[in-house]
Image 1: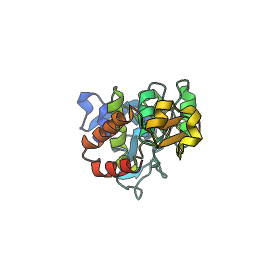
Image 2: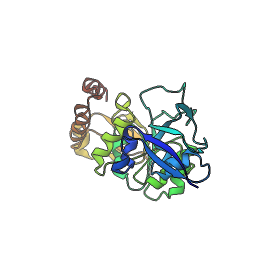
Image 3: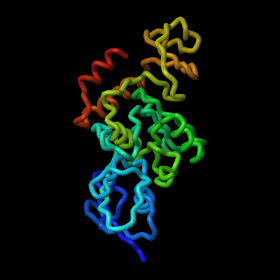
Image 4: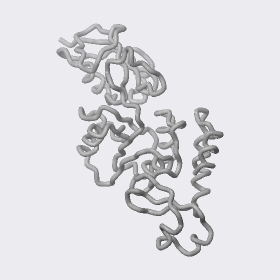
Length: 263
């Protein structure tokens, strides 16, 4: 005979549910005594999107067995609110913004690097490699593949909702509350390495003559040795970043301008 528990999902977890189950308590039928994690994922929500589970008002972890009749409340990741006193799902929640992105998010990876975030990306990573690197290097896995986030190895991940890369960037910056951590033009957009300020003499042989005559500041990647300077695309990138701060109330445009002055 089937048993039933009553689930309610909050905030953006409703993105994964059909209309009839959004923002309401609904019945979930099952057999046996499954772990609450299995029931949550059977309803379409990757476990990496969940930070707090209350069963009959008490915080539980993913292994909690559901036998029938329980009231289950499920909440998303709290990036700006400390709930460690009651958190059971991840006793050591990951907060350091280091990312790994799946093969479909190359442009987003470049944008994150432009803002100074550690964003690991290759277009030939397998799903297994993504899951293993995410776990071993404590990186947040960004993907549009819901199934990838259901892998047991993945403890921290986020399903990208938008399709356009700029919207994806705004989504990630807002979701993980990264505005105060932006360090533009501090990381290589090609290989993800950190940049060092260098003199013209150190890179003269790798810089076109017209650039040597018009630019005074240069940076070089510690990883791939790519050389950067404030060329024709620099102002376009500056405008792009300013737009991120202006379009979101959590962004501090004065803070961005102060950082820009120190680039």
